[in-house]
Length: 345
Ligand code: NDP
Image 1: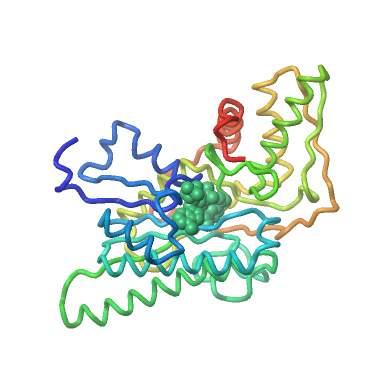
Image 2: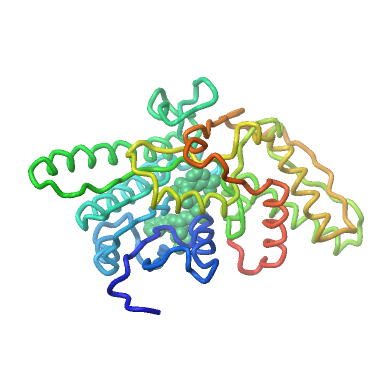
């Protein structure tokens, strides 16, 4: 509705993924009234392969964005990363270089890209914060993904320097290219693939299959196998919370330096805690079946913890209320149960 030519365009790359779908849900709430004068465009890989400059250029010139939220990436859990470091590095570098280059060429006002807490140095002190990204090599399991993500910060700083030099001559407003650092994300529309998903969606899918099997066999109990000891600690953020925070960053955060988007440090839980919450959530949709947890310690654990500090975020948004993980997992399990056919798996 309205005269679209007066509208500013907010382009979301990776708009069909876990985080992109959550952003779409947030901007649709309240009949879209929270973001007046802004037209949101959500891109998926079907709209073009952003790792190919020509295709990326075509999409960007078609939409002429004023704002870009750059979520598109080759993403996967521990086991997919371990096997594909070269592709993770090359493809993500190509995507990021193309997107930021086009944001520069089209003079996008604000571009927010996405790093991750799993790209931080392996040997570090905790909690990690925004100043530590480049302080040492990342964990070996995902070095390709990690170095590609770190290069986004290098690009952002490089562009800032370039514009500062140009602004000395022209005096125009300079764009802001920045990045956010989410911890582990989960929610509806996740990738639930059993081989290459993150831990929560992977466990939800496995539990689903076990419960269905038990229903068919008429048994009252089943088991859920957790790969590894279940002891690693993680901060999980619900995709809709992350979406809200990313939109806040897009319109309010003006530094080039990244900002960690995470729940508080005391909200860190073990993988087994998460598995337990998943089992309890299935008990809500299938009350007759009890799920028992088992740990398969023949699998590697990955990093034992990666506690991140959200102090910078809390300085800006001291009152932001995160969705309790019990509620987020319950909603995610219910979503998967009800949308099994359309879920990515
Ligand atoms: P998903 O895997 O759910 O979505 C990835 C998105 O990127 C999809 O929309 C996909 O399109 C798109 N995409 C992938 N490759 C290409 C390509 N070559 N060209 C164009 N589009 C492409 O990822 P998430 O939503 O989980 O992640 C979003 C961002 O958040 C990523 O940058 C990720 O690194 C980061 N992140 C994620 C975390 C997590 O726990 N999930 C944690 C920390 C950071 P399509 O589906 O249409 O193929």
